[in-house]
Amino acid sequence: MAGSWTSGYVTEIGYQWGYFGELNPLRAQIAMLCNGLAFPEIKTACELGFGQGVSTNMHAAGSEMQWIGNDFNPSHAAVAKQMAEASGADAQVFDDSFAELSMREDVPEFDFIGLHGVWSWISDENRQELVDFIRAKLKVGGVVYISYNVHPGWSNFIPMRHLMLEYVERVTSHSKGIASRIDEAIEFAEKLVASKPVYAQANPQVEKRLENTKKQNRNYVAHEYFNRDWHPMTFLDMSRQLDQAKLSYICSAHFLEQVPSLTMTKEQREVYDGVSDQMLRHQLIDFMTNQLFRRDYWTRGIRRLSGSEQMEKFNDFHLLLVRHLDDVAYKIKGPIGEANLSEEIYRPVVELLSDYKPKSIGEIIRKLQSKKLTASNLLQAMIVLMGDNQIAPVNVDPSEKVRQQCSQLNSYIMNRSRDVDEIHFLTSPLTGGGFAVSRINQLFLLALQDKKSGEEQLAKFAWRFLSARNQRLVREGKPLETAEENLKELKARAGEFLIKSRPVYSVLGIQ
Image 1 (cartoon, rainbow, N blue to C red):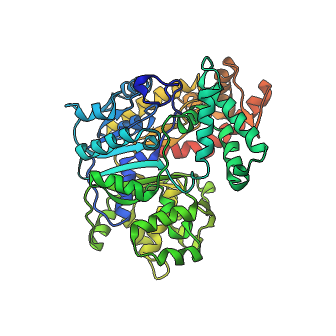
Image 2: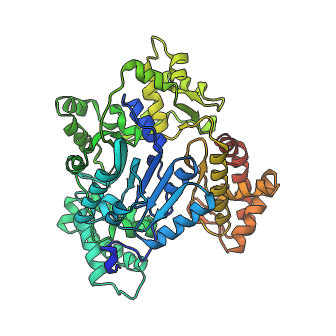
Image 3: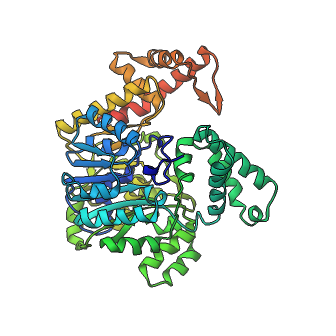
């Protein structure tokens, strides 16, 4: 599974082609502002352990920031470098260790450093090197994003994960590929659970976790579960470790987790309110939600804004509706279940944004504030709608350079979609990052660029690439076998694309 340079990390199979919006510095800035904190102007940014480099490249293309990306897997770095060359953005890519990167003379100090997931998959020694890197390279006032596996959500699955790893190493044939060996380990674990050991009876969630794991992409599963090192930790342990780098906690990067009514019941809120220590309160929420994965922002040096400073800066940050009006939802899935949003509060915000023109947070508050709709109500509504990806923070006037970089990166991604189903995002010059666009919709965008129009022409264009590679659509879990079935489904999807998706893409500068 690993050579000496890998430190036990899976390198035989690449990581999934994911995009993670929490790594977008614009999102970090707006999170700080909504929590009443001053934020830095971000000119230099870094992502450590970037996987295939999708997020690094989209954020570099969507801004004029200087981006440094690092992943010690040279295969990942090679792919990311190719994307950077395609976009023409200011992005440098390295395949160094954390310690090697820290010693490079051509690596500047950073306003923003991001790490998605890698923290939980490396050794204690490498985690310390990460902390040392942040201590050495983060500017005063700078922001750090870190996501990591956390207790108590993972506590009952740790023994099973360890058993599956040992099975892969000790029982499966090393001549087979890692994906095949993982399948064997999952099958063994399922047989074990089916035999009703006391462990499984005492931890009934393990069976469900195995079912979910079996359905997941093997590239993801290999990196999530089958590294030698795999260390969930508590929020407070994380805080103590990051204290070495002089970091202070800001807030969750998952905006829905910033809203108490979405993370705890009234009875739980009473317990929460009875605890005076703020940091312990954050760990309590992990118990309320049985948290598996935290996504957090931290900063070196907190400066709180006055009320008037915060309101003034609200004028500088703009929001945009990024769903078709018919698809706006007033029921969302929060950390502890579904929640109904008060339409008295949320509908006015949506209606104000329904012209698909950016509005500043300050403008939204000024136009809607009343006795019934307080500034606090409205701000929380905006946080929730951002957390549910119904509205997004945007740059209102991206430069021609940024637009060109995004267009070039999107062309690279869409042209690959002719052959493979990899990246399900394109880059928006307004959001400064990725926006979800399925492979089929990418093919439809290519069709429009090829002067095709109408549902039938778009469907035939997409089918030409799918059929040439013997690929089929799936509907309700079943593959569509005949050309007629696939074309009918593509035509239906093209109709929805033209009515709902394309107008939103256009507003976002995705053509």
